[in-house]
Length: 243
Image 1: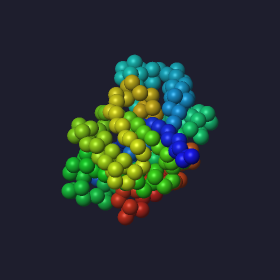
Image 2: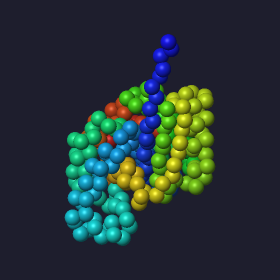
Image 3: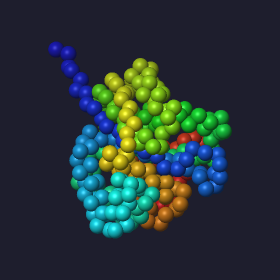
Image 4: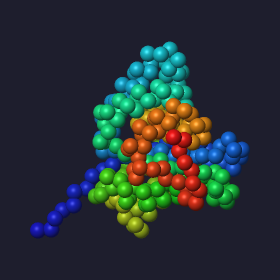
């Protein structure tokens, strides 16, 4: 009897921090894409919500939540994020992996970044092909990869290309899974998108702002980054985390 292959779905939550730009590059050198891979998002979501509940005991964060219906990573100090990350890692450390893509605007060309949708699609495809495929514990026997992306940060034209682009690349040309699904969501309604926004901002602060406390939060998170290192684009530059 032929052995059947057990396939599983995986959820991937994606957000970004910084800009794809050639304007004032000395102040906008890095563009960070953060990805969280999991097969148990509900468990992680519960722990993140408990962390946010603790934040809401402070008037500043309660005001932000009342005003905006969410708290952005850029509005929270790394010291306060540390408690949230610690809670998630203690309770869900085996249930997720992170991907961190860092694009250095100093080393890109005007032509390449002219179409932001194309840039985002291509860099994401490179990461999935060269890092996730070979180094992730979730990469084997994937049925569907369900990507959820914050709609506020993604150019409108990307929404009409990424799904087809990834489907073609990874189910036809160089199979990685059986099916891709890409959904663009309002972060106000999705705790997991809020969490990956926190994480993207942590790495951005570390690289761009050299935030001292981010040394601690980045070190915590790096234990769960696929391959144990950030993924650089282009790979000709030698960007180092501020540790």
